[in-house]
Image 1 (cartoon, rainbow, N blue to C red):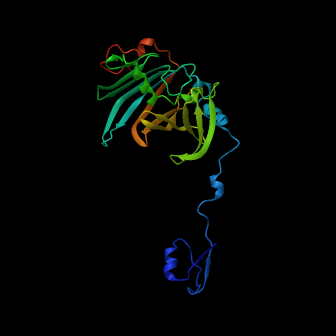
Image 2 (cartoon, rainbow, N blue to C red):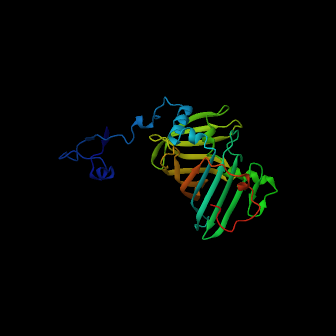
Image 3 (cartoon, rainbow, N blue to C red):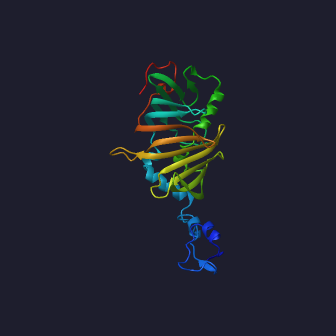
Length: 279
C-alpha cells in the first residue's frame, strides 16, 4: 500500500499510480500497487539439481555419447573479425579441424590436435595449428614453444566433455539470463584447479555460454542457432560470439560439421603454405 500526497503535482510525479475516480484531491487517497519484482522470482530454478546433474542433462541434450566422445570434429563456415577501431573483416571461408584427447587435466592448456584456416576472397588470412606437441603458423613450426601458451586464450569449451571425469568438480552457481534466456550456471574445476563457467538454457539444456580467465582478459563465448543433421545426434551451434573483457572480438558462423573422421598427422603439421583452402 502506498499513501500519496493529495496535491495534483505529486499525483503527476507518481506516474503509474491510478487515482481513484472522483476522489477529492484535498483528501487522503490510498492507492494499491503491485511490487516491481516478486521475491519468488529470485529463487533458483529447480534447486534440487546440482552441478553434476545439470552437466549430465546437458550432455544428453547435446548428443549423449556422440557429444562426449566424438573422436574428431570438423567445422566450416565464415568468421567476422571486429577491430578495436570499429572496423570489420570477413573471412568468407573458415574451417577448424579438431582431434580430441582422451583425457584432459587442464581445461585451458593445448591438448589433442587442432588446425584453423581462414581465407578472405581467396587470400590466406589465418593458418594456425597444434599437432599435440608443437604450434605452427604460416611460417612453419614455431620454435619458441612458449607459443603454446597462446592456446590458453582459446581452449576452454572442451572442458564440458570431460566435466564428469574423475578429479573434476561441478559447482552450481546463481541462475541468470543469457541473451534473454533463463540459464543454469555451473562452474567446472579441472584437476589442475582451473575454473570454467558454463551456462545452459533451462528449457533445452543447450549450451549458451562459457567464460574463463585468459592472458587477454575475461573470455566469454555465447552460443546460439543450433542445428543438426538427419541421423546424427550431434547438436552444433551455428553462431559463436567471442568476447574479451566484454568487447566482441569475432563471431564464427558455422554452416557445416563432420564428426568422427580420422585425420592423418600431417593435417596438423604445417610445412608449406597452401595456395587454396584445404577444405
